[in-house]
Image 1 (cartoon, rainbow, N blue to C red):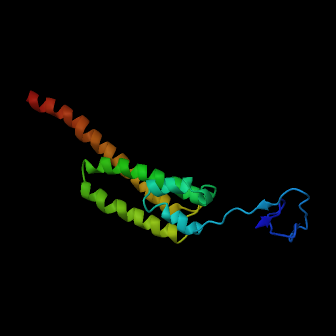
Image 2 (image 1 turned 90 degrees about the horizontal axis):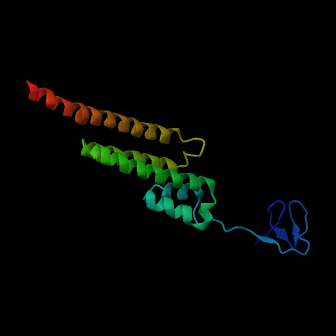
Image 3 (image 1 turned 120 degrees about the vertical axis):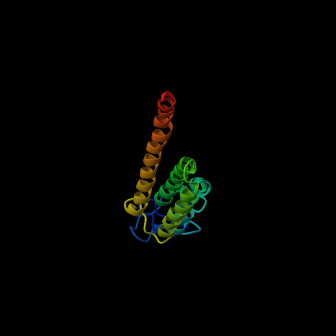
Length: 161
């Protein structure tokens, strides 16, 4: 379908129905392809396989230009990297905790994204989940320091007595 260069409205026999502009001699602009799935579903699908679907939606043509889908695609990639780092850290100490809480957070974020609750300006629930994971990272780093750094010094003190 041909669209007006000025306002993007459909052309009727070379004349814009909205602004009345004519397309003098230059070929009319073709309208961009409409996406096969809606923005809410595409945004939610970014979280299904995290890294894989995030990269796919960054590469697929109708979605790579959509700011909302790009936001969720990048967010899913960063969440995946954070989860991998967190799983490695937590698996050193409490493997079952990581296996129970991480999918729960992902499921809640997926469901809320599918429902359209998250936008680039309104995503407080996701930020709380991210802050929680950052807090857990800091706690595990502190415990790592306490157990391995201070604990290594305790062996020398115990050997002296």
